[in-house]
Length: 560
Image (cartoon, rainbow, N blue to C red; front, top):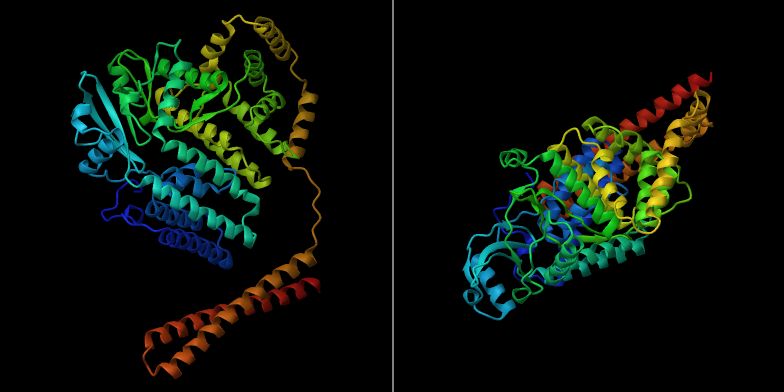
């Protein structure tokens, strides 16, 4: 699988790597992929199987190119607004587990960064890392004061590699811009968003600041634990943190063995995430099972604060208003909230977005989530982006990635959970804070919700609403087709394909003849190969011409 480390050193692990060499590697991989896409398009192969092959090939190239491209793949695994589902599925399997760097290198980095011999800082230092990834690795250690800590050490040469990739990708985008390729994807904006987050992720001082800020936000919640940062033993490449072991949050059996209720943990986890997103405006953007644990007392432990994101926090009145809008399935109000938070960019036609949101609200607010319906929403999302492509803001993609991860965890801990019930503790905590006009807003929204429930639309009104929905979905439309134009386009397509293969055959035969005359038998293998290619192309030309002739005859018969 993709997670299996390669037995040989990968390209990006070379000690000496010049900017030119890196650019050649990056350009070769990218243009090889573009050529494969062009070849598929020329053959007219747009099948799901073909996309799966290409996405698998691309994932292997990303693993070869190293950390930046692994992170690009992981980021793209959430970009349903940009890529077909086959690529999303392939990128979602992309892992960055690589062999750890050796113990001597780890010691050297710590000593150079902290300016002291290793064992004058730590009484004990484990030679084997607890975890290893493409960006760095983590060792367990003990301070001379007796406190157990973990030491996060950045992989050697990582920053230089990032800078080489930053320049190589910028040159690639400049070339695309000159050629006029991929205009609708807004690649420059995506590139800036990605590298801004990535350079923050490899700055361990920033990660330490994120951890302190996260702890400050949850200082009134004793059930949330964030490891303490030892600033005197931390730099931009070395981070020393309190060792806080726990049970992996998705290990249901281990939780139950410790008399911890998985359903309650699930509900508390959703409360914590809603609080981060809506109240604090500062949330953990990578909440996978390796970054969340549970203590034996039922406390929630968060790790790894390299990927954090900010959104404008809502006022408590706005939170209550949005929550009731979700209950009432008021898509307009929910869209207004998301737009105000910068999580949606308004476009000229918001009908597909409203349709998607209505689908989500209908399926997931009042009943437990099941796998079939979760798959249905993915299909609906792809249909929306095929109908009207637009780019989601980066912050929204982080939220979508987090929600997808959290949903997987939630279904493990409580297969019967539903979002509305799980959100109740958060709404109650907001409502209990009697500040400003919150009570009056809560009363107003409750009265509006009761009125909404009592005044459900009649059958005729429901029929009109369904008719409107079908019009919005484009199910009812007037189609005007010109059969003559369609026939002409099909004939032109066949003629163009024939011309391309005629050129290929002629070129192959001409080169083969030249090699035969000038090479004096030295290039026999190449001559045979070129004759084979030319013959194959000629067969395709004959097949296309026969198809074209047959189509013209059938059309004449139809006209007669």
